[in-house]
Image (cartoon, rainbow, N blue to C red; front, side):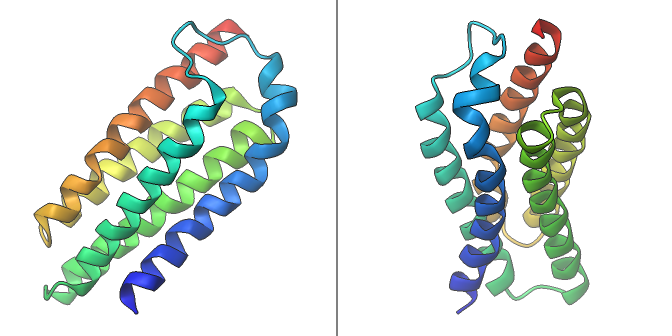
Length: 152
């Protein structure tokens, strides 16, 4: 049951992000100047799906592990914060069409994900490692976001 709930919680944030992202992809986002390293639009869906799966499994590994309740609570709170910031980025960037504000927000998202991974590591090294691709992707997304701000 914890695994199912981990997926539901994580993919609820994914669905919220998609709700704000999808309408802007072929309209507003298509009109932006983007850097040469911007991946084709079809890459984002599979990458994010994989990242959300890894995030959900990481949450489950922490949740099921016998650990001091205070450490586990801290880890789950940090996960919730980063997941909220994750969904909020899509609202700001695509929904509000504010790349500059989204750039500031993604910095906080990156910090929150790193703190989550560090917190997870105290409970489950495997869970922490599952967040490494997410950390890398957020770094790339931040560079992409910055490039869009500069080019537009």
